[in-house]
Length: 260
Image 1 (cartoon, rainbow, N blue to C red):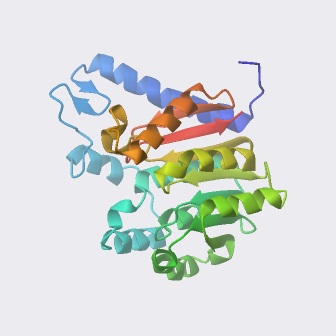
Image 2 (cartoon, helix red, strand yellow):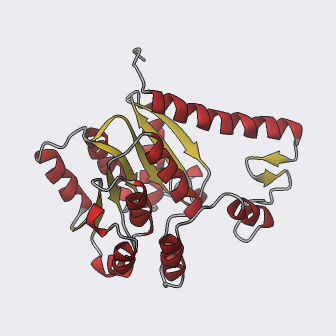
Image 3 (cartoon, rainbow, N blue to C red):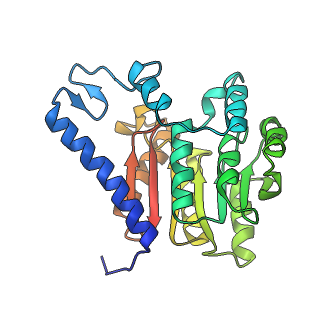
């Protein structure tokens, strides 16, 4: 790979993630009954409802009151399980602040929890281009965007995300965005990634959700197009010299791609 320069923010972010990983490795050596969040018996100590997961949340999650309100509202929805995990959302917000993000793209809005999460940390003249095809879901979050005083930062576009991304590129906005979050139909992940990579500036970040796809990426079945698509992208990202990456076991897995 040729030598490339990286920003101070990228170096700091990479160092933070590296320290977290090293700490995990050392913890694994000191306490050999732990392996990436699992006991040697195979029991997931970070699973839903686990005391340790609750402890982590209780001692790290700093959720804006309106964000919490939207989270609880979303979890009561029949499709509430589609919402991004709040700890993952907080990490993305912290990384966006670290690189002084002003413009963000979100592909897959659902009720707008992460849309609100990102809008809250952007400067007053910042914007989130929020892409989705279901306005009914987004309408759940809209009143809370307004309540939080950030609706002017959110540019909601109800149309296929590929179309919106093409429009941004055609408008000359390549390499002007700082952060992108991909969490929509898995079959289009590669297309979303390639277009976001063109729109994101050097030193910007693309966060890709569901990269573990409920564990199905280990052995995607022939009929599971979604698992196959995610697995292919994971393999591509691992080899992609245009980015540096960290794959984290948060939620259903998230890969952070830092554009070089």
